[in-house]
Amino acid sequence: MLQRLRHAEIMRRVRFSGATSVRDLASQLGVSPSTIRRDLEVLDRDGTLRRVRGGALAGVDADADRPFAAVEVVDEQDKETVAARAAQLVADGDVILLDIGTTTMRLARRLRGRRVTVVTSSLAVLDVLRTDPAVELLLLGGMLRRTYHSLIGVLTEAALSQVVADRVFLGASGVRPDGQLVDTTLAEVPLKRAMISAARQVVLLVDRHKFPGTGALRVCGPEDIDVIVTNEGADAATLRNCAAAGAEVLLT
Image (cartoon, rainbow, N blue to C red):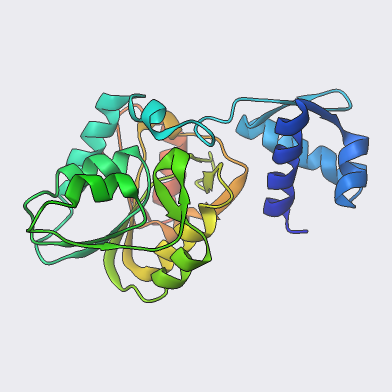
């Protein structure tokens, strides 16, 4: 089993039971106890669970299961300034991909009246732009994820394979200190990767609280990100690692 899939399964089991042991996880996943201990150390550093002697306890998984409306009101001003700066990167005539999330929804609001093409799996973006005659809006198909107002699954991935975009505006649960982009939701990770593959330029939109951030699942490395838009006050060491990998960092 790949490490990222093993981490996701560990988190699922810990959330279900509230606590679990190294011995039980090793038996259930068919790996050695030493492998599970290393996995738990990584997940503990990420903040997605709490490592304890002999096992792990459920930790705080920031936004994975919270409804969209609850996430929307968190750090509103930071998200607004990130969205405003990101809108300046969009040129008339652009074809852009908008990821799911509350920051990309705010960016969509700032694209009203612009002669652009927006491709998205976000129903929140659809709600913002559906009546705007200036914006050409393409909605990707898929299975409805009700809690987060988005479409997911193989149909969404298949539709993305037909898209060629100028840039994608990507969200994430967090950025690790080494610059790795991570997420907490297994179903969203392949879609983010497909969006990265479909765009000429990758722009990461994350507020300062996600530097460093948490998440058990790797989306991509810092070398895959062209531009990062975030707030003053984001962790400086993490931003330096991203810049060293080639990302342009824009602070608001």
